[in-house]
Amino acid sequence: MAPGNRSGFTLVELVVVVVVIGILAAIAIPKFSNLSEQAETQSCRHNMRNLASALQMYYGSTGNYPHTNEGRRWRKFSAIEEYLQNWEQLECPSCGTHYRYRITGRNYDTFRIRGWNRNCRRNHGMYRNGMPTW
Ligand SMILES: [Zn+2]
Figure (spheres, rainbow, N blue to C red):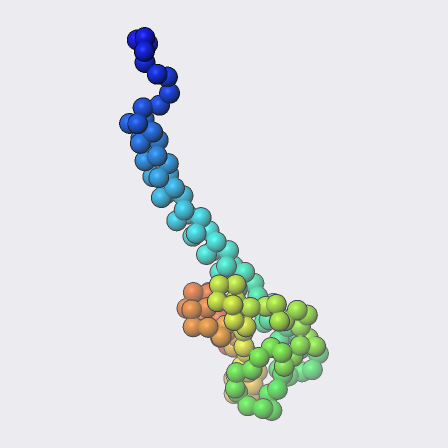
């Protein structure tokens, strides 16, 4: 090293390091956000599976689905809260809305479940004829 040279980084070296860090971040951040999106999808579908099995348990113990005599309108799960623990915590993690169900079929013998938010239905699916659409 020539006498008088200061040790340390030159401006060019610092710029190169900053650019490299920027490129790495640009690659990593979309991957992480994709991961959390997948986690929300899985969690939402898990919620709907729990709600579906609650409806099936209701069917198992009463012989019919809840409120079949009140028609085929969409209902909140609060209507069957005695069959569901923590139903109020079951909401879509990305949309923050609760789910609703509707009893369908000619003999009211099947059900639908969906998140109350359109984004949830589009991104996470729903139950139709008692079966998940995903
Ligand atoms: Zn959802």
